[in-house]
Length: 177
Ligand SMILES: [Cu+2]
Image (cartoon, rainbow, N blue to C red):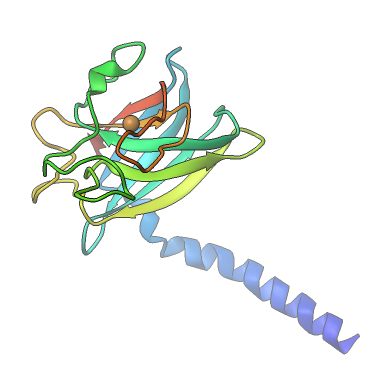
């Protein structure tokens, strides 16, 4: 019984710590954001970008995505106007590297790890990139023509061809206000 009481006390303390931790949450002030829409124009999620000491931290949340793994990239043009999101162009690769996280002479700066949607169609992932920046340096998201995050129908192979299939969600990167 003493053990059970101690356990309850520990759980209560953990719960009480929640709001205090939230106040110092480093993820409250993104440097850039993107609102993800599907090809019907419906809002399906958002991306928040935080400047790290080196590169960026990217948080993506989405819903209404088919269960399973999905390619997630930063594409080279900040334009999601085409229904198939082809207007966003190719993967962002200002450094001229090749595609494929698991290949030589790679990856594209815009290559990011696949994200997973659960059985409820929800995606929640944090990924870091030491190649990308919000502004300045070798691969800034906010270059002259901007950039856009894309979620694909299928997973990236991490090989020389992404093979991730159609683009199912797109969001233009915008400086946070
Ligand atoms: Cu892509």
